[in-house]
Image 1 (tube, rainbow, N blue to C red):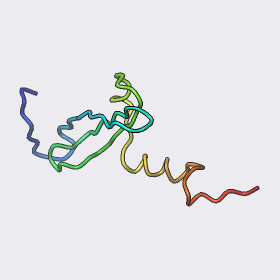
Image 2: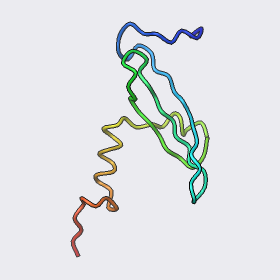
Image 3: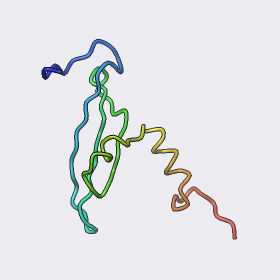
Image 4: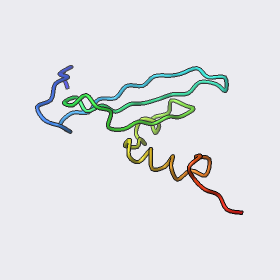
Length: 81
């Protein structure tokens, strides 16, 4: 990499950043994967730890949105009973 943070086309180079957010329930860690060419976030992961798999097991924004929309806790999901 030699600290070269430029790309000539999309998906040529992705970089990641890891940060933490203190919450009432404890620390939350967030990893963002960014396409260097377009400077857009192409994936992320949120976890309660900073283990290696937290950075490697990320989701694209579309996958994360789909997962949230299918979650039973999401307000748009109708429940029957």
